[in-house]
Image (cartoon, rainbow, N blue to C red; front, side, top):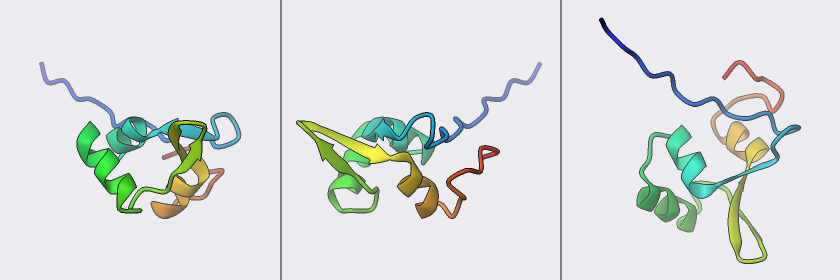
Length: 73
């Protein structure tokens, strides 16, 4: 029996406006350290809220060429 794992889906920005850097990295196929390195270089869009570094879902979708309301991805 062959098993496959589906890629995690990008959340709807209306429902979940931000995600953590490691979550965004997983969606991009990156490990935790690589995700933070990409965020530090500006390759993953981030905002700082208090001491937390978050990724705006709509900006990540735009970076990937997806419509902010397209939930099929």
